[in-house]
Structures are given as C-alpha cells and as structure tokens.
Length: 548
Image 1 (cartoon, rainbow, N blue to C red):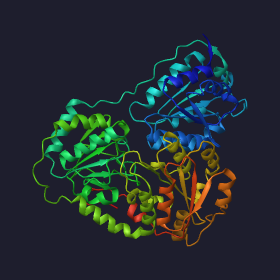
Image 2 (cartoon, rainbow, N blue to C red):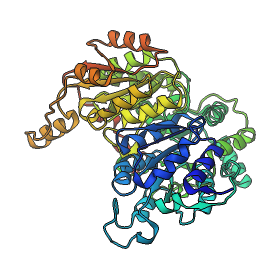
Image 3 (cartoon, helix red, strand yellow):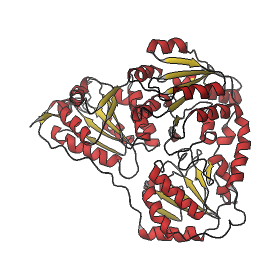
Image 4 (cartoon, helix red, strand yellow):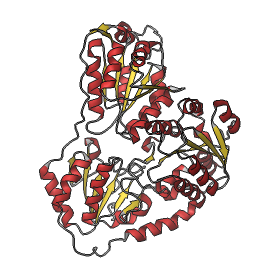
C-alpha cells in the first residue's frame, strides 16, 4: 500500500511513541499536517502562536518527560523564529526533534527567491543540532525519522532535525514503518572504572561536582549512592540542581559548595561542562586531582585538564563504580568542611538578596516536592540558582548558558503539556514575558493549568542596573506594559494580583489540580543585586587559591 510522504512521517512518529507535536502549520507542511490529522486519536497537534513558542514548548516537554519533544515548523522564517529555542535546547542538552519544511527540492540553494527561501538552510540547522538529515525521497522518511529518534536518545542528548521538502511530503511511496528506535547510552570502560574507584577510595576529601547530565531518578539514585559511599559532598551547578534533593545532608549549591571544592583533594565531575561563566574550568589541577564522567567528548577536553576522563553515560558509569568503592569507615579527614556548616554559611550570605529569597521560598511553599519551577532571566530568577530549594530531578528548568530571555513562559507550557496534572510555575519579569505573551492563547486553548508569575517593575531591571553602574545613565530600559487584567480577559485567562509572599503561596496552592491557566501579577520595586553571590569562582590556580 502506498502513502504520501506526510502520511509516512506521521505513521513513523506514532511508531516512535510520539503523543504530542508542537508547531505552526504552513503551506510547505500541508501534507505533513494532513498526515497528523489522520492520527489525531494518537497524536495531539499543539498549535502555538509563534514558532519560537512551539519550539520552546517542545524543549519544555522534553525536559520533564521520558520522551523527546517534537516540533514542526515551516522553512526560512519559521526555522529562524524557532532558532532561539533550538539554541537553548542545544545548550541544555534537551532531547528535541525538529521537523523543518523546505522549499521544493529542485530549487534548494538555487537562489530563485522561492517562498520562505533562505541561503544554506541545511547548514544553519546543522549548527544548532547534533545530527541532521535532508530527506529527498519519500520512501526514506520512516528511516530518517527512526534514525533521528535513535540519535536524540543516544550519547549526549541534544536536538536533532530532519528537513523534508513539500514535494517529498506530497509524493506517494511505499516504505515500511519501523519499530521505535532505542537509544544507545555510552557504556564505560571497565579498566577506567576500576582506576577511578581506586583513586576515589584513596582520596581523603573527595567532592562530586554535578551538572545537567543527571536529570532523572535512576541517574540521581546512582549518584546519591556513590556520594554516600564516599561521604563526598555533592556540589550542583545551575543545570545540576535537583540531581539530589537539597534536603540531603551531602547536597550543596554552587554558593554553599565553594569551600568544599577549594578544600577537596579529589574532584569528580559528573555530567557537566565543568566551566564557569567566565570560561574557566571550575577546578584546576595541581593540589586537586580531577576526574570526569561525560557523554560528550568535547567536555572532557581543553581547557579542562582531567587526570582521568571517562567518556560514558553518567548513570551507567556511576552504577558500575559503586560496587568497586572501598568501604569508608574513618572519620572525615582534617580540613574537610562540614556540609551543614557550609549550608548555614550560604543561608547567611543569602540575606543579601532577602526580598528575592522571600518570593522564591513562597513559590517553594506553594508547590509539592515534584512541582516544577521554570527559571527566567529576571531579578527573582537569578538568585533562584542558589536560593530556590529543589527536591527532585528535573523539577528546576533553566536556559543554561544560552540565557535566552523570554524562554520561560513558553517552555513552561511545554512542561505542563507533558504532565497536565503536575503543578508547574513559570516566573517572568515584565520584560521577558513580552517575548511570548501571545502564548496565553495557547495556554487557554489547550487548558494548560500553568501558574505564570510576572514580576512587574516597568523596566529591564538587570540592564538598567548595569547601565547605571557603568555609565551613570540609562537608555532603552523603560517598558510600556499592558494592563495584565485586561490582557488575561482578552485571552480568557484568569488573572490575580498579589502583593506579599504569603499571598503568592496561597494562590499557588489553591490552583493545584486546576486545568486552566492562571496569570499572577506581582508589582515590585528594585531588588538588591545578586551578582556577587551567583559568581562562579575557579579553584586551584597556580598560587593554590580560588579565583573569583
């Protein structure tokens, strides 16, 4: 039996277990969308109001789901609109499958001015993905989709993409639908595991530094077991928050964990780029011995310098490591910082950002342990990296080093779509919220019960502070905001205004289980600067001291 390329595409997505596709329809995708329509009982086509929103939703869906997030966009401007979200997914190792339209096959890269044509689209896509394929034969579509899902679930998770021209989607062909792809995690080398176990067992003051490579319960369980066997504090990077619960006695934020890293004689870096925001290794060798486990070979290379580098899946490596660790019965070595004292020290330092911390703790109090907090580039969001308690893997969502302003609200919609009954909170400044406020329409249409908080002060707050401190004047920082109550009413979204942290906690709690969106407006004034607290020192320079 023959099918159009669009029908083959949809059928293979069903075979891969896809339940939601986020996107925006367009003429180059007509046959793909018709294919989805034929499987409407198996796949929900969630239509956003902008391709950027659709791609962010796919990213959010992937962050908290055990499935990749799938996005469908037209070529040219559609792809460019989605580019910011794709770059965020790339930076945060998110499993996104991007399906991109193309111009008609005979005209690709011919410069004829076809609708939505941009030069070298394939090259652009390749720069934002770890694997990419342009499909030129309808019969090849199932195999291309299957390989995309194998790639996105193997090695380091990062976005993948396939391009399909409209003539290929329209062409009738015969091709088998393939069984769902199975990921291929990188197994560790047994000899390296034995070597690492011996070095860790001999260490007196081991510390584990963890990043976004630990984001599910099996990997987190293995990490916690290794740390407990070693008695090693776990310092979590921004992307690593939730790798272990902040209630665990060995858990430390980056702020709390600095002295532990500085005092360590052995640092094990797990699933992390191991770089500061200033582009320096978190810890330098010398008085520190350093080893790393990472599924990305590039993150084991210079400018880092590891005595032992395991190119492997973090969970598999930790599970293999655990039974080979020698039991530790001796008391902590002299000079080993007490994690409890380090947390107390960090709490005192956080008094500097008490107003932001009060709002963050109010949100935490309103959410269950597994409720999801979606960070943003906002005055309340910056301190959340060190001040918001995280209790479960995958429940703290961040744009990582990409720092994409405005990513938070649409990404949170994808998080909510992945699990409609799980409480999710999106925090926003009034500046960043403007990037995607039209997606209130999407939230209302699909009854996504997201609580979206907008901290409103009428300016790009961080930009204003930098300009004032650097130049003594400001320009371009003032905002003309909508009346949020009227905005919500226009989209059919309930709006609440709150003025105290206690009120915010109550609003979040009361909304639990409600499958309708809620917009919460919080009028605020200037906040104290958090930058000294969230700075990331690089430890162990040539002089043996940590460097701010």
